[in-house]
Image 1 (cartoon, rainbow, N blue to C red):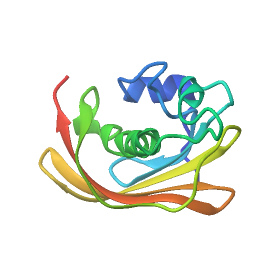
Image 2 (cartoon, rainbow, N blue to C red; image 1 turned 180 degrees about the vertical axis):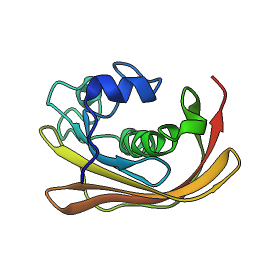
Image 3 (cartoon, helix red, strand yellow; image 1 turned 135 degrees about the horizontal axis):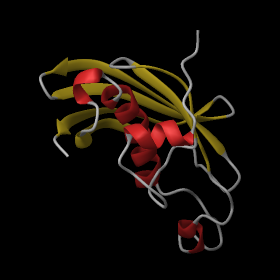
Length: 145
């Protein structure tokens, strides 16, 4: 059974706010295990004006941040981490396979693969219409707010 979250529930978990909240909805999540979320990229996103004016694409770091926020929902929804902040400490084996462009809705999947104390590791994948755009592994630390 799916465990979805709307935007207000996401904002109860994540400290991010507009314009840096990168999740529009969560389709499913299990605290401490995984999160499947979505981000819509409308044509009027602020960064498309300069990245790149003649061929707008979502900057890779924005996609990585969206994936990290999906992972943060997974880890920060655990009882012992509620009200804290998750920070990326490393990005490993990152591959950009396809561009994300204005109008795309990106599916963000993050899976927590290890937790030890307040640190952990995970895997993440961003897709558009089933096509892989970004795959990566990441490390994170949970910090007191």
